[in-house]
Length: 303
Length: 307
Image (cartoon, rainbow over all chains, first blue to last red; front, top):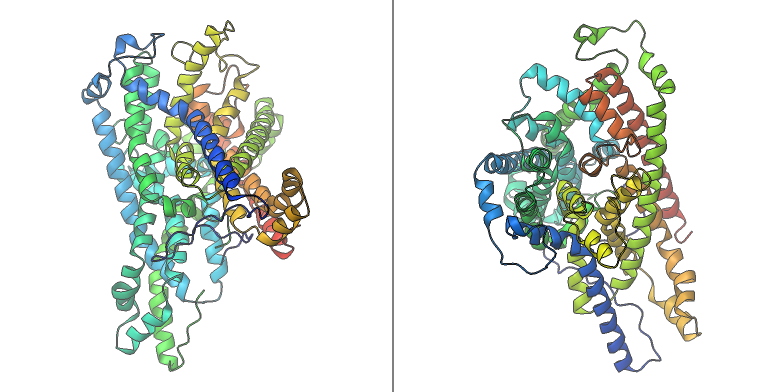
């Protein structure tokens, strides 16, 4: 069903199946087992070293957040951790920005699921003429650069009075979230056997009744993963929020930039804000790692 | 793409079914129409007018529709921005492909450690881009950067890389690579899963070296994935914004001012909305051209696997 296809099967989103394991590099027939064991672990160690090196910049940010403000420029690595950076965020507008981010992301997620899930189901089960074109159009909207949307949205919102509102921002996020929902949920619905629905239809269920009672519950893990991805994509947005908000609906990423511009010397506070904004995303990454791969590469592989 | 084996269905039931599905699809299509096609059309129309904050009456003035595009061709700053964009995109995509491929080969194994570290390697890609920008702002600020401290300790003090016109663009390319190498890594790992075992086994029994295995068996197998990765990242690299906004603001001078950023400045710093729209249309055209290329290449590699 993909348009851009090479045959790559990423983690299959079958709701009940365990995640497929990446196959071991080809067995070396002639080698003794112990050498293989050693080799694998050397590789694991190397991977861990690289991992620490790669994540070091991020860990540096996190440790800055816990440093006392007067030790920020210290040469010494050791220090007594403090929460002062975090508590200083309680004064001022950061709490409000954080709440705005939560509200906007949740609202946009709920909206895109409510609108997109039935469409994904219809696209999965209904083979109408032009179906491929519709699917392609939905995918292409994901490719378009945000600057192309921001100028018209900015001008329209000035006129509609939606500028600097949480609702306006949540609506803009539909431009990418809706495509994600429709694209991802199709693969989840495909893994639900159509025969179950047909049985329900024979028993007198309507299309949407059968969908609600049978298909959707079976696709629930996929639905949850999709919701998380929508939330993360909205949460991560900076460009739209920068342009479409001023004071009332400012989100946490924009608040961080404001700190950098107006309080650039308060590194502990800024690092604390950065850590807090990164936190939900890192938690979600661990929670939905099985499905993450699929969402992050949506459209770039043949499903 | 399920085909229903619903044979007992009468024409009435089929019609009813189609109606129900259309009912489910309609809201999405209507919303997508309003939030994607209408703005795209508005952008195109806007790019044909001299619309700006100081001249709001120009909204529907089409007496010289190509004025913005003519101006673009003479605008040295715009033309430079395309060059900057290409330099940044090519450098960072090449780096991402190299690093991503290397890490995928390293992580392609079944041991517990490798499996677990795979998720952790995704962190740079899922972090909010503004946090990534903040992380690199810290790394590139000599006062608090561990990198600058280490260099100073070994007697090689370096001035801020992002304040230096010679290094600023490459500093951004490095940060961009850090953020996006996991994408290539993921895709290559997925491709390695589908590597057929037989040829590899046969070749290693025949005494092929590891480099020969990689060069003649693994690389041809994953090459289509690398091409698609490269094109996808190239398309996405046109949208790079937070890194430039936070690290250099397009400077020093205009050495890191990519096309996307120049469009942003024209539209939202100077409020030349018509002119900014024209720049956005050019970027949009570039993106569509590349997307079309992805589709083409994708299909070709699908038809001739391994070529």
